Image 1 (cartoon, rainbow, N blue to C red):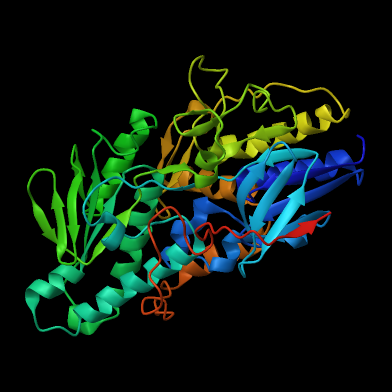
Image 2 (spheres, one colour):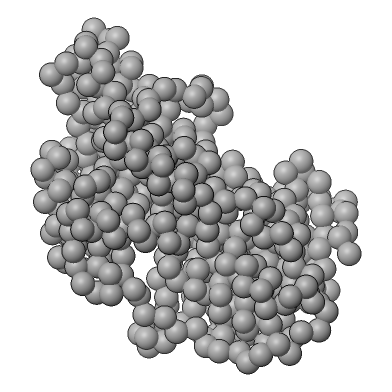
Length: 442
């Protein structure tokens, strides 16, 4: 490879693994730069366990400087890309503009919460895309139980002990499972709540839970949820959210103080701002993950509409599994564009999914074989330990401690702090700002 600067926008599954593979391929012959709002890669699949008090938040964060030592990290948010001058305009965390030149660019900006035009959602729903949101939700759930034990108003108590999760995909299902375990654990330790149960409601417009997965996984998951007395409302959607509760499409009004929004994600706003062709909101790329018309620009992960060669005419799903593998392939193709090897198209068959339902329960279909119960729980744990880039020992240790002790449930003081917004960006992904003054990195 000729000496060149390769800039990667985003440190999620796609960006992190692209940088890791490029480090191996370039062997110091390329200048690698990563632009990311945080100094860590977030292992999103284990985030529900942070909310549930099973894992410490540091366990699901992997330091980029410590694990990608040959990659220069630029903290900030990409604001604009000038394709003519090959320059990325960045705003750093302290609102200072920075400009970074590139020879090759990888756009792996990831995704953000997907909002629907439903009254009250942006104001009263809790999102779930980052550490701040996971910890905030942990604080919120703990606070609702503690406020429920002090009120003399029975209606208020039941509203505070009613928790609604919208979205019965694997994120929403896992958030509900670990949230329920947390609230039940807290309630068992509060004598004033003896005999009461928290009420958890899972809502989805689909006709089954885990609608994108094998029906057998849906059925086994549904059995677990029913056994745990989860109120599952399928074929139902939210029509309005208010401070006092949620109105559903069937006309039902449910008093609650908790609405968790896990409906889905959409590509980062940067994709819309580029002015390039998109498909289903994702940046158009070819099977080599190259942006048509720009041989020096590549895209992968949730931000890219990657053709699914195993399902002609379709795009690859927005999953961590595809993002990670696309990161590896885009690294090889970037290297090939600089004379290091041969480009190859992205082709990957799903290896299956794992859904954590709280040990000893899980649902999984490794290599298309549906399993459930303790065996699925073991497969799920093993999968996460294999794909987590670091902290494996600490995660396993937290799991062991969690199996032997009660879940931790204290407020960290986040609820009284600034609200964690559900709209396009979390505190880890702040709104874009424009500033003509800029520091250039050369």
